[in-house]
Structure formats: structure tokens, C-alpha cells
Image 1 (cartoon, rainbow, N blue to C red):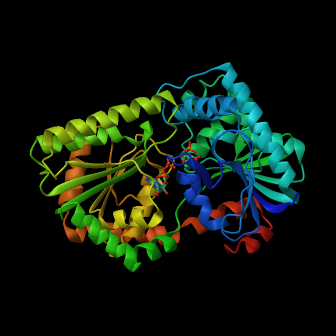
Image 2 (image 1 turned 180 degrees about the horizontal axis):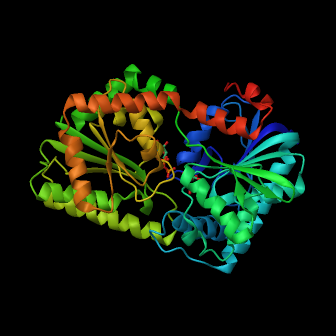
Length: 471
Ligand code: ADP
Ligand code: G6P
């Protein structure tokens, strides 16, 4: 087994086994922000990525992806049901997102979570060279830092949570709260998207485990664990280069024409997830049409909602409700050749997404709760001419960094409608000023700055950084 000096451990590998309608296996980029975030800083580094390739059955042998070695961890059908769909996505995911859907608790799910975390820890232990840095990602693998430390005390272990981390009142509902906290404390550095999340974690370590934090440091079993916030970002250079490509400009012009060359294009791009506030947004939009504030003739909404976690009940219900509502709105307000909403559920390649960002006069990103939301940042990076208004939920992590967006509370329907109208009607100078400020921020806080700041905090002698080429 070849070993690496940097090992990333995430539930998902960057490529996913998506079976085509005719049954053929096809490898595609995996969905979601975690893969978008890690892809660029790891490119062409001597790293190994340990993760699941989608599907069940034996682990496929995968080729390197952009120079990064893939090490596949298999999941059985039971693991998929009880670990991924169960504990990760029907217990932790809803709980961490303000319990906007009811979290479920089943003892069998917890057993699967432990078993799968153990398997990931064993895989990481196998591929990490002596003294390596191992960077564990996200809520599926919170026990891995502790399990890995027991197997390989020589390693430097980091943990980063990509999603929101809840206040103590919510986290305390978890029957196995102490084990989850202990698992994370197996790391040398526990990172979150926001300072508030890091604070919640420190409070919980004290309340549940009696381990108080001093100056963002917690003493555990004779070691010091540091806790901090590291807001994740995007590859702004890559997005800028993409939108400036002539073929992307052509695609954008074609798209705008195909939409009937409207005066305003509003765009939303989400995974089909109840945290994203899709239903609330559709309701606000349909009321604006019904009230006569928005005319379907000159304004179109493009809603991209790529299906996600499709076997989890709450996601199935959401998709049915969204599709019913889109049908109702189009039936009521659309005309032949002029739907009120262009609804797309396909995954797009990066160039197609960039073309969509290019034509969006208003980008509506209104989650009920989101750890960060990279779509909002991608849109800002794509607006190379400083035009375009970003409508952004106060409950997305990105709002703390992009206060010049049109900020809204998505739970407040009237506020959401007013925010959308303000973004649609904003004067060009005002839009430009706001966009310039957001773009300046993002240029300085891109994904390379994120990886650099996390890894330099983790690996204090910084030998790793020079190898990564992120310095
Ligand atoms: P989450 O991680 O919860 O899905 P983010 O907004 O942080 O939310 O990240 C979503 C990522 O997935 C972004 O990089 C976005 O470009 C990508 N994405 C979303 N929808 C699609 C789609 N239909 N096709 C391809 N990529 C998509
Ligand atoms: C979020 C999570 C990621 C996850 C992604 C897609 O970004 O933080 O860990 O990979 O959603 O979800 P999925 O369930 O398809 O992996």
C-alpha cells in the first residue's frame, strides 16, 4: 500500500458512480460544497483522498483525479441505509440545521455510524505515512479523529465541519452527544465555518464533558485541542477564467435568448434540500406575480434544483411539494412558451453553471440555515463586470462575509418579497458598489487562503504547506 504525507478523509470521493438511464456506470463529479471546496487546493498535490464512491458493493479501484490518489471505502446496503441515509442525513443533518425537519433517533443507526467511522479510520491509518497530516471532513465522520488517534498516535489530525454546528440546546438532544464530542476532540484542530459554531462547540465540551476551553484551547487526555473558525470559499481565479471563456459567453447569450430575452433573470441553484428554503422562495415569487409587482413577460425565474439523498423520506416529500408548486405557479401564471419558472433538475458542468451565473441579474440564495453556501460566492466571483444583485439569507454562513448582499430573513415572507423587489429594482450604481465590495473580499479570501489558514494552524511547522504549493 502506497502511503501519503497528506490524507483527506471525507464521506464522498470527488467522483461519484452515477448510473445512466441505460444502466451503464458513469463517473461524474460528486455533488455539493465539500467537493467543490477541496477540489482546487488539493489538485496536483501528493495527497490521498479516502472516501466512498457512491453505490454499494465492493470498492472500485479508481484512477487518480487531478493527481490526487483515490482510496475507496465500500459501504454495504445496510451501511448506506443506516449510516448515510440514517444517522448522517436523518439525525445529524436536520439537527445541525436548526431542526427545520424533525431529527430521528434509532439505535441501529448509531451502531452503523460507529461501524462506518471505524472503517474510514482504519483506511486512513493504512494510507498515512509516519507523521502524516490527516484532514477529516464533515458530519458523517465525527468519530474518526478519536478512532484514528487510537490507531495512529503519530499522526497530526485535523477535523473540519462544512455544515452549521448548532447551539447547545439543540445538540443536547442527541442521545450519543458525549461520544460525538469526544470523537471530534481526537483531532489536534477542530474547525468550523463560523466563530459562533466554534463557540457552541467549546460550550458543549465544557457542559457535556467537563472540559473547559481557555483561549480556544481545550486540554484533553494530556493533549491540547485547538478550536477555530475557517470560513470556506471558492476558487475565484478558476471561476473568473471560466466566465471569460468565449464559449461560455456564447452559451450565456444563447441561454438569454432561449429564455425570451427578458428584462430580468432571477436564478437559484440548490441541491434539492429542505434547508435551502426553496418552497418559501417559490411562494414569495408567486405572490409577487399575483400582486402584479412582477410581470412574467419581462422577468423569469430559473430554479435549478438537483435531486439529493433521494431515498430519504423528507427529501422525497420536499421534491413532490416543490414540483407541485412549480406546476401550480406555471399553470396559473405562465403562458404558452412563457413559463413563470424554468425548473431544471439536471446536474450541469462547470461551464454551463458559469453561463447561468453570467445571465442572472439577481441571484436568489435564501436557505433557512446553511453552513456557508458556495453558490453565493460562485455568483459573486462570476460577475466580472461588477453587475448583478445577490439576494442572500441572513442564515447562510456567507452572510457574515458578504454584508453588501441584499440580506433577507427567509422565514419572513413579506421581507423576502421586499428583498427580491429591492434587488430587482436596485439602481445600477448601487448594485455595482455592492458587487465590487463583495468581489474585493472574495479575492482576498479564496479557497487557497482557506486551505492555507487551516493547514498552517494544524501543521505548525508548515512543511506541508510548501509541498501543497498554497503558500
Ligand atoms: P451544499 O454543499 O449544501 O450543496 P453549496 O452551495 O455550498 O451547498 O455548494 C453546492 C455546490 O454544488 C456548488 O459548488 C455548486 O456550484 C454545485 N452545484 C449545485 N447545483 C449544481 C448542479 N445542478 N450541477 C452542478 N453543480 C451544482
Ligand atoms: C453538503 C455536505 C457534504 C456533502 C454534500 C452533498 O455539502 O456538507 O458533506 O457531500 O452536501 O451531499 P451528499 O449527501 O450527496 O454527499
